[in-house]
Length: 160
Picture 1: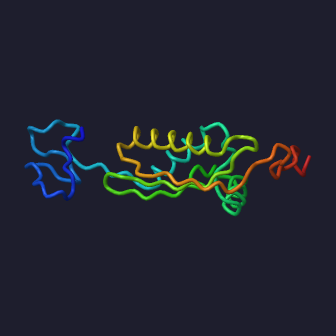
Picture 2 (picture 1 turned 45 degrees about the horizontal axis):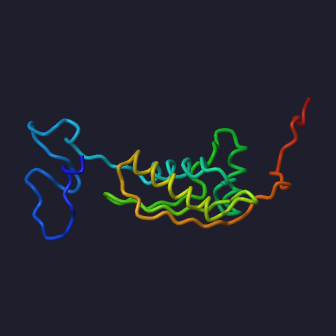
Picture 3 (picture 1 turned 90 degrees about the vertical axis):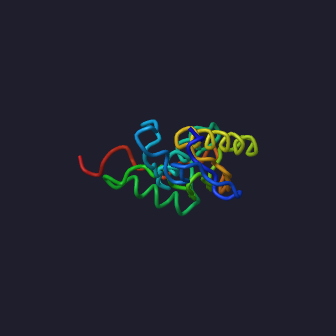
């Protein structure tokens, strides 16, 4: 399907009926190429966040304050889980760049985990959006130790 999108620049003249933003137009063009598809930054951020969390050795995403605010937001009814916490993206017409703040499990080789995250994020974003991922920058903000516990609420409520 890349044949129906021309490259920007390079001095070559685009084919008739083809533009950088839209597919071919007119009755003779295949149905799947008629029109324009726009992918929001938040969509790419969700895909990248989910893909990063799937990698063994990743404990959580987000820097310290983002994790603290996210934990509070998750406790509020309707607050939901912050899938995009620790994820920043820049999305262009054909390319995307991803920045991730991660917390890794103690004992895992960080370089290997980072490589796995890059591979998984690039694969998921490119497969699901068709965008080329030009870079995935990873900042390891913390290491989760086995004896560290999350700020857990008591299992029982205050009222019986």
